[in-house]
Length: 181
Ligand SMILES: Nc1ncnc2c1ncn2[C@@H]1O[C@H](COP(=O)(O)OP(=O)(O)O)[C@@H](O)[C@H]1O
Ligand SMILES: O=C(O)C1=C[C@@H](OP(=O)(O)O)[C@@H](O)[C@H](O)C1
Ligand SMILES: [Mg+2]
Image (tube, rainbow, N blue to C red; front, top):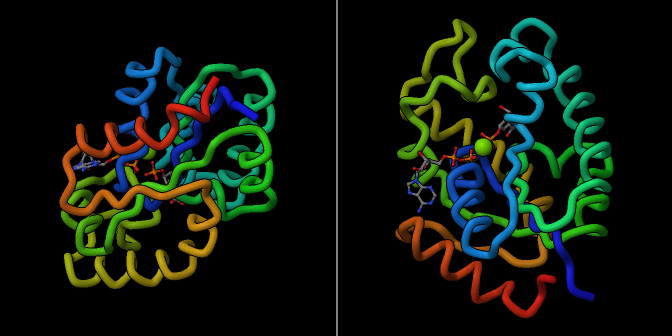
């Protein structure tokens, strides 16, 4: 059965929010970033939601907004958050309705892509500051080991290490061309 929703999953920094709009444009779909949608609905940044209301609140709202949106969309590329598919039954919901693509990257690559970014609360120190590179690598490696079994349940994965953004998009296009409506 051909599908009209494409979801991007993968660890923080794997490129979901960057690849998503480019892919959408190429196939004539619209684009939505789940994190941006959460920020708009909540009127608060992801960092502030985590800081003021905590991760459990974030996961509940993430799940609620995902459920509300998922049945309304057609011809959309959706960039998920890095944790979305690892909570509750989000993974099964997403797979039932769309094509799930895992943007795979090694911990070493991920560190290089996000080491100066302050917008991922799970990768900041207790003081809210950027972690030293060796600690960041350790944290990413540990969390990725826990999460990868979920990511690997995607319909397919694309390895993004040593690949530029354009090549990643091209590879996805080849894989989905006969699967989308
Ligand atoms: N090959 C690549 N694929 C995706 N992103 C890349 C690549 N090379 C460098 N980047 C950079 O890595 C960062 C990925 O961040 P983002 O798209 O926000 O990831 P995510 O939404 O998965 O957390 C961006 O700054 C992007 O420009
Ligand atoms: O991996 C995670 O648990 C998270 C990833 C973030 O999205 P990105 O993967 O787009 O950075 C965002 O949803 C939040 O900070 C939590
Ligand atoms: Mg993102």
